[in-house]
Amino acid sequence: MNMRWDLDVLYTSFDSPECKRDWEELVQQIQDLKKWANEHLHSTENAVSKMESYITQLTSILQKQYRLYSFAELTASVDARNEQALQLSERIQELAVEKVEPSVQFQKWIGTLEQLGELISKSDLLEEHRFFLEETAEESKYMLSEKEEIIVAKMKNTGSNAWTKLQESLTANLLVDIVVDGEKKQLPLPVVRNMAFEKDVQVRKDAYEAELTAYKKVDDAVAAALNGIKGEVITVSKLRGYESALEKTLKDSRMDKETLDAMLTAMRESLPAFQRYYRKKAELLGHANGLPFYDLFAPVGEADMRFTYQEARDFIVKHFASFSGKLSQYAARAFDNRWIDAEIREGKRGGAFCDNLHVVKESRIMANFTGSFNDVSTLAHELGHGYHGECLVDEAFLNSDYPMPIAETASILCETIIADAALKEATPEEAFAILENDISGAGQVIVDIYSRFLFESALFARRQEGSLSVKELNALMLQAQKDAYGEGLDHQYLHPYMWLCKPHYYSADYNYYNFPYAFGLLFAKGLYAEYQKRPEAFVKQYDELLSVTGKKSVADVAAIMDVDVRSVDFWRSSLALIEKDIETFLSLADAR
Image 1 (tube, one colour):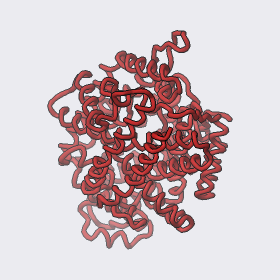
Image 2 (cartoon, one colour):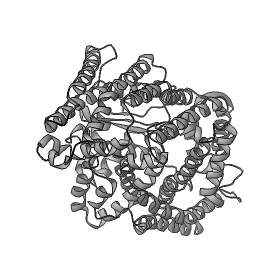
Image 3 (cartoon, one colour):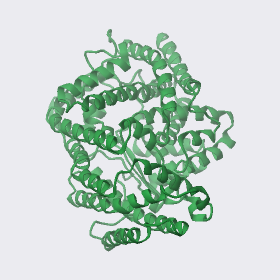
Image 4 (cartoon, helix red, strand yellow):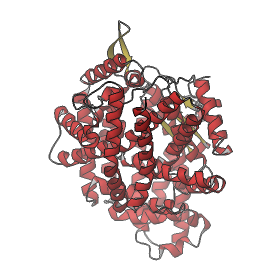
């Protein structure tokens, strides 16, 4: 199968007539919106028609902007040196600043409207966008003046946006010096990081050491990027009146502190169970002092499950069908229509992501496929994101943007489907390996995510006092890993540079992009347990849940399934499912 995606549905090239036309129309439409806002947002007369006009114009602008920007970013993600992609991305970011003035004017204007709810009820279009309008009115409390907002937006392009690009470029183009089979090579960072899943312990250890050494080539520059981004976030958050970057993130996530605290409490309670798992895995691999970081993802047992890309496609499509035909058909289209770029090559970003292209009712998935079961699980995860987008294609464009915590729900549920299916088909040895792989994945989303939350909290606290050196950043990361993993890991072999290779830290608009993964895993685990009780009724209700994630708070979305996310007991019940798997793993390990 072709492992490179096809982006022609967006544009055939950066020089195509369609791409040039959309750029010209986007520039004009933004100017038209600015003119309209200056002429109409000075009074509250005809408020209904003004809100309708704004929504119509904004939707058209955002659809074109998103189409152009996605084409540029998707292209650059697999070809970091593509100058046309990088230039278009930068031009769009600069042009987007032009939207700030009318956006601020509208937010401030809607914040002055009395009885907004009644006005919205007078129009079908406004009723469809009720959540967007009411949220916009609420956000007006944190707006700066029009002039200040424009300055902040313009400065971002030479500030945090530029720092983000620097980190992406340095890590995408970083070549790691490593000896493979006695031969000295320079390999892309994603290739070397993927060696953590290899069966040969020496390969894993050599890759770990080579990776850490390679980071020294770029660590000062990436540290500057991290300091620049977090410094900007602190400054802007204070200017807007937020108590902290975390408060802003929670509001952006449509989630309250009570929910976060309930989840973190349950996560902390579960750490001893995960630490027992890590100690047992270390014992199986011959380590006496806990698990060294280079063996965190080591396969356990004799089973070495390998998949060709075609086999991965068939496995996923087949087992998604056990959940729903709609999910399976979506996955088949994604594979067969080349919506996925899974080939590893130089200049391509590491990791994996999904971009839901609402404007063309499709999605695009980037992955780095090497044939491991973990890679199959990753594809299932990203296809879950894509299916989420599939459930939103009939929603208005402004209702298709969902918050971070809910974003991981569909993806992790799809991972769970695949793990469950693999267990049923596996030999006893394979089942042991799959169970271990599933617990390992859960550990990343609970234990490692908790370490990242601790790191970012400490980073923000220290960054208020000044910039941090590479040595200080490494020390913060090591302490966070010790606090989360405890004696589960060998403290002589941790990963001080985890702050450098994770792109989640490098966006000024998405801070604390760690706890949403834990939310997604635990919410999905709870939902999957419910699915097993009543499969047919659940699937319809589940699709409805995904379809409204762009127009409800996290708590209200969860309430569709009668879940109270502010209750510690809900999170404990989901973690209990994982802890049960850990106990099974420990028993099977002792019997080996």
